[in-house]
Length: 597
Image (cartoon, rainbow, N blue to C red; front, side):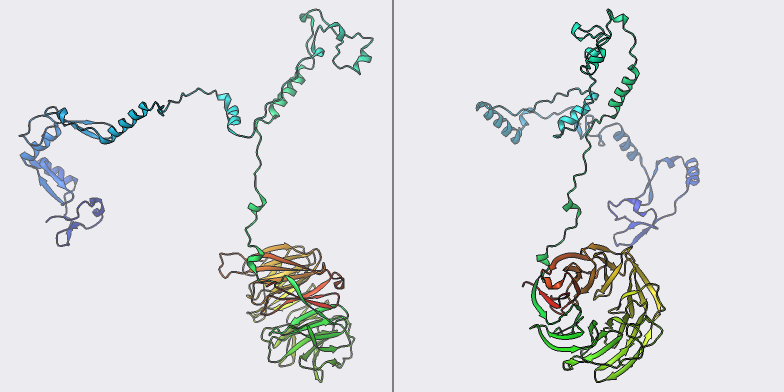
């Protein structure tokens, strides 16, 4: 049975039960062979056992015949295997190849054929010599001996910059160091005081011979100072890291590549007599609401900046907000301690609502539950103290209210006319509260931290801290995983709710306190407004992949040069579909910023 594994190494089959395959592709199983003791016994018993060799490839023992032994002996002696061949074979080896030299029957010279390429090379050299041209003969490089102390000089010559600084040389001796100076430099005791202040090179003592000079008293001190000079002298100039600022900063796209974004003032909505404190745009993007200190709420048409309706109240309107449910066509307004739910189709005029027995500007009393009342003016919710802000849930049935200076958040349900407190009293006053866009969470912003609560499980999930900065406002990204917070120091803190409780990035944007921040619902844009009469627009691309960081690029600084703003911008809001930004200023006007395209 012949093994057909070819040139495959036999080591591959040592751990297997077979040694190869036959012609039909069947495995050839290994045989059981004798161990070392049995081989020793066979060697003693069988005198011809030494002729047997083991064929590992065929897995069998082969007995060598006399002819085989004679052939092996001839190969060991360097002779030809065939007896009929005459002569001896001598094998000569060098470093690269093994050449076989024949002692007899040498090749005759007439059979020598010169190389064609060598002939061409010789011809080229001959033509060059005939043209009297110099041959590029490689000259042998003389290896010069180098001194070990010349390393610094060699480094200095190889580098274009003079980096080697020689040590400070010792001062040369002058007339002060002479034991027998010239006559004009000799000074007696009577003129020592006069010459001491004018000529420092004058000496006072002279000696006729060098052997009469006493020992130099400050010798040790001067040698020590000289050693310090040699030890502290820099032998090499150390180069600083030549790092350019543009190499350290990340490469950001240009604003032209990130268009569209609001960049220029397009329309101005005039009509309010006092500061505009709050603005809100309806979900369709056609109408705009504004609340002002002149105790009015105005409804504007966005396309023409025309005022459609005006509602007058008895107190300042601190906040306005549209209901996200477009079917109800309702908006909310915060007037003193009352939350008014009014239909936007109501005609203009004075809006009055019944007052309760307690004072409007009373102290904060979170334990008192609000009262719901319905009348001709709409639905009113009477709270125990002044209401500063109202935020709606995305479904349009729930809304949360904040009491000015209060320490709690109250959630109201419009369909059932009910209200409830969701937290115990907090230690710090609450600045803002918002519903999570996709989860049953609520974000509560205090002066120092932002708390994320789970309304279903009624527990605290995460506490976000921005350090020692005082927080003033916040906005949630439409995706729900990121949060932007404004501070009184003019900085913006970007939080990633999936990463950590500390800010992912802090941006020093404004010179004064940040009054409002807002995200665009569809485009990767967010904006901030401040008391320094500026609004800044940023590009914020949030990637769905976790291995990519959020890209934040500042795009435009919108400045209000008009004196009617009185260096204040209180609120901002984006158009739901277009790259437009509405800002409310202190001069009673609202400015719409559009893209240049």
